[in-house]
Structures are given as C-alpha cells and as structure tokens.
Amino acid sequence: MQGEKTDSSLDAGVAELAAPIEAAWDSIRIGLRRDLGARTFDGWLKPATLGNFDPGTGTLDISMPSQFMADWVHSHFGERLALAWKTVLPIVRDVRVVTVSDAPRPSPLLILETAPEPLVERDPHAPKFDPRYRFETFVVGKANEVAATAARTLSTSPNVAFNPLFIHGGTGRGKTHLLHAIGHAFLAAHPGSKVVSMSAEKFMVEFIRALKENDTIGFKSRLRNADLLLIDDVQFIAGKD
Image 1 (cartoon, rainbow, N blue to C red):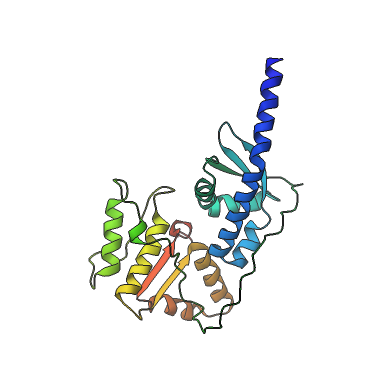
Image 2 (cartoon, one colour):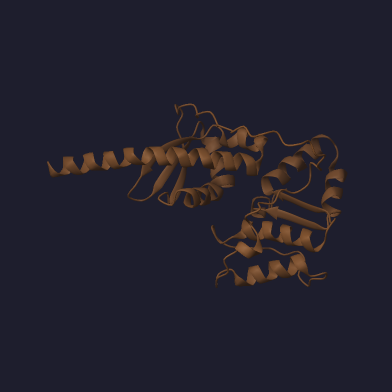
C-alpha cells in the first residue's frame, strides 16, 4: 500500500510539471528558430516533440521521428538544447534525444505578431548579436578569466598578438556570450568595420550552397574580406573534408 501511495504521488508530481515544461519548450523552440534560422530549425528541430521526464534525475526526452534525425540533432544541437533547458527551466538537468516512430505531431509554433517596423534597408549578411550578451554582463570566474581577458583585448585593441583566437570549454561556460560580446565591442571600437558572424551549421549550409552554385570563390572572398570573422560551435566543422 505504501508503494502504491508513492507511485501515485510521483505521477501527480509529474503531471504538475507538464504545464511548465510545455511552456518552457514553446519558449525554447522560438529562441532556437530565431538563433538558427527558419530553414535549419524547420528542417531538423521542428519535428521534435516532448517525451518522458524523470523528476528524480532531471532527465527529459526529446523525441524525433527517425534514428537518423535523432543522431543528427544529438550531434549538432545536443549541447545547445541542454543549455537552453537549464537556462529556462533548471529542473531539467539533462536532455536525451530519442527516437519514437509514432511520436505525435509537434504543436504549432506560436509566433506572436508585433507591430510592423518601418522598412529599413539592411545588409542580409549583417550579424545579429544578442543585446544581452556583452562584456558588462559576463560573469568572470577562475574557469573563464583568461578567455574573457583575451576576448576583450581582441575586440578593442588595434593590434593583437593572437590571431585567430579559439575559445574552448564545456557547456555553460559562456563561449557564445563571449562571441557576441566581442562582436558588440569590436563594432563599437571600429565603426563601419565588416563583421561576419555565423554558426557552424550556417557555415556548412552556405558552403554546400556555394558548391552547388559553383560560387566557392565568392563564398571564400566574403569570409576573407571580413575585418572580424566569428564562428560559433566551430568543433562541428573541424576535420571535415
């Protein structure tokens, strides 16, 4: 009888968590679509659905319709998903990408309509840096103080001894934060400079497109002519042919 009571209480606890988990998932999906771009998100992450959640271990399953998609999402977006969940809903401490062939169709992604902004001609390649990610908001500790100092020096000094600069570390150490902070500070210190910022996924998509369109020279030229080139999650393209 005691065991049955415990199981019932556990089920009730999981049911109470369903609403905040679903709300957090909606927020995370909107953020991922904004950061990765509609094409990448719709191709890989839109089919993802919520799976089981274990409140004891804090492990949440993200279900994909095929093993291939599950493997790809785990390899390319696993760390990003885990960090997003820890940030939005800390009770989720780990994320597993699993395969469920009969997974339900994902709920529609709600994009809130906003008042139309005045049309401003904008460079489609201009970087979009998160306004929250600046040096002023970066928390410096023993694990990242060297990277933070190097990043600030790179973004503000006219000449630097280290070029290129690689920032390496585990999940949640602030690598993306520093990347955006470099972009903000560099543009402030060097107005009018040409900055190119992209994720590893975008790099691969644009490179493959350039191959198909026989425009690899133009692709290389755009990157080489940049005053500052920033690539996030570069480990995903390291060692690739």
